Image (tube, rainbow, N blue to C red; front, side):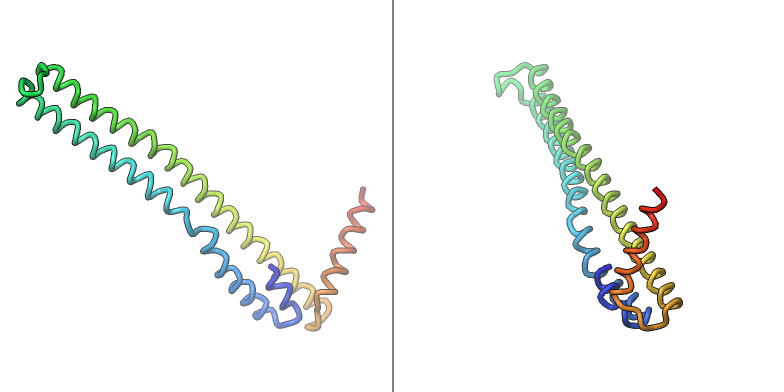
Length: 158
């Protein structure tokens, strides 16, 4: 919006281009790191799955060689299943909140971008209206006068 106001004395196409250029600079900064949360959530799920597989392998290995480990077959099976379930649980405990947080941040980013677009469009419409009313020679001073008259009319209406 600052880019639009800085170029308000120029043709409306240049005002629009200046605001778009500024938006192209800031939009990646707003959305830059949101994908990392989804990545970490997916990695946590996959690591949990890897632990589950490892636990099941331990269970079956324990069944075949439980006497060598000094365990009964039931103890070896239970230890492997326990490892599998603990890994699954921790993978999900990490992944689910991260996915929720990722979605929340993505929604906030999108809302911010929508708001920027809304105000940029409103500013463009205001510049166009003022140029239509006052001619092509509109400057930042005209906007300050417009803001002052809007505040006065609001104060009178109270």
